Length: 221
Image (cartoon, rainbow, N blue to C red; front, side):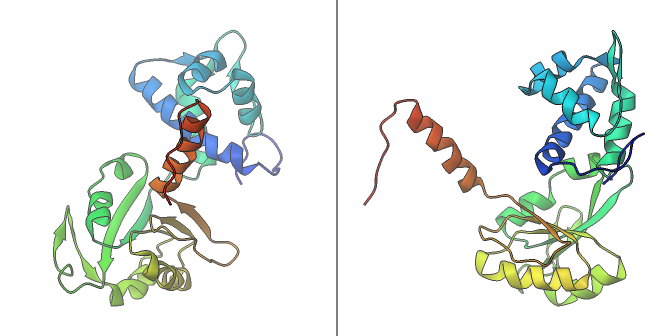
């Protein structure tokens, strides 16, 4: 874990999860022409208390200026260092179906330090097809490609039944971070990080709170 101007210490994962939110807000502020931002104003944008923001950032160093707040460009640069995105990360995508195609065509990755370099699938009807700027490669080439290009990040957009086998190959080839779109929990060894993107889980999370609003829950038998 990177620290700026202070000894290395354990940083709670919930704090790390908020850092990209700060980065995104600061990027927008820079585009709007803001040179400085207070923790109060930043918190109002994000719905996070200013004390929490100050506490989070203090784990990595002293960023604020008395009476001025945070210098946007400086904090942006340091957050990129802390999050290890001061350089470009190469990544691969496994799965070229409807979801995989949408992911492959998403332009936001390149703007934020990530470059998709290959798309793989095992469906003969998809292999050789073009998705955005990529030609879908056979899954049989995946392990060799990942090793040859020292890929450390991968995205999985395959059916749940195939996701674990795909993850096993990727990890064996050297991948250490997986963004998982498959609706299944992956088993990976220590040192490999998995982030799950399952919209149904988020919807179920939200419906709990809708029920608390007094709306009658719909129960199916």
